[in-house]
Length: 529
Image (cartoon, rainbow, N blue to C red; front, side, top):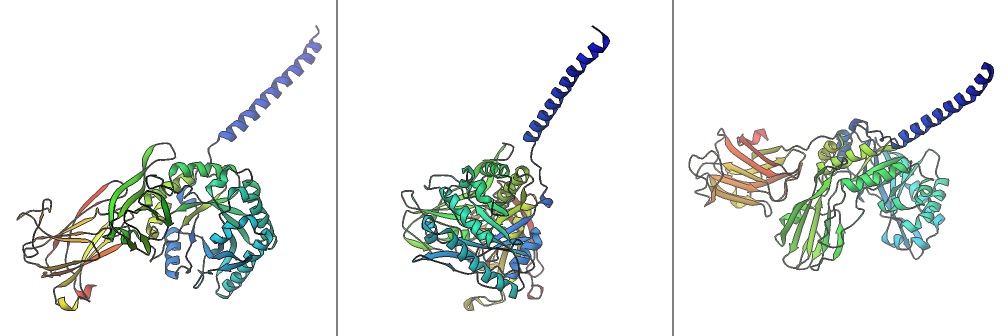
């Protein structure tokens, strides 16, 4: 064989080898890309938004505090409900009060029970027309109030089987909006398994899947939290694979579930005050525990979402909820730690299509069922929960008429940290001198006791109940001491203006860690208040 012929034969073989190598490299790159972990977001890189979900627009103070503490850039404001009556669609319950300013607003419309029950028979275009009419009215109102509306969001809990019809409504809605208007929807966890979800999302700019409340415990013996790291991880993975821009909807509120004496679910509420429940003498605390969980890496941990169970001793009404004797009231309380774990899971798994985290709900001064702004901010920043209890004794400026004297004081205890105390675990002991106490008046059913500790004792451990005249310890045990909360009690005492009072603080936090501290305080004068 000649040299030339050998070269001609070798060349194709070399080309073939090169081509095989190229194919292998491409395949390897594709496999690596497929299995590549999603981009991990840093806390400071992750935008924050809030849902505001009351009929009353949030106050300027609440909005400003939320924006300042969390650097939130958007609010999804519930602007009303779409209802159907005698076949006619209309908006009801429009939001009351001035619209938030200096923040991007998305006006949200959800459906009443009546609408949801008739969705299968409602004309999609008629529903779109009813929504667009409400939106245009509110958009004009926002312009007059100098509020910045940038989008429209639909929050209709469409059954998964009706997603095809929902898509038709969304397309009809999109056709009537300006291109600059952002159209979005909320999403149920149950939609994730539907083959129709991809096309349903096509008409919208982004969506907010709700990574909480996917399963409501139908029986009182079911231990199902509002959200868990495991469920959030699963939902985030599914949302990422859809390749559609999304906010992760996370829960920062407690819900209360009422069960019959036989354990059957009667009702669910998300606005009850855990403190009012804990203070109700008709309700017996029969169970309290944290929900177990694992983190995104599969490590066992505690979710820091707590479950409290109460049994009604007799028929009664608590926070406008009627109960019968034997009914069971279950309160599921989130924490800064549970929200922090949820947000961390989102940042680790969501990938490049993540637009941010949307927290339900915007904290308000008069919303004890929601985490405080400080707690939300700590969770979003991925900062450990802290415990910081402040104690003050202040002049009582409005004492009961029968007790008015210079010896009237207010004991004020503030949880200035971001960790809640578990129900009934907070204990504040004041070490005083025998004969100083005249009378003690707790607020509600909070426990305020007079105790006797051994003479010369530097601690209050082992102190026993005794009369107020003999007592040298005042023990204050508020039922609830959540983050940001201040609880008070009235004291009638002879106090020296310059003498320091030793204070011993103990509480169990929702993180599972005990907290103990010792302070020395001096009763403050009226001028220092």
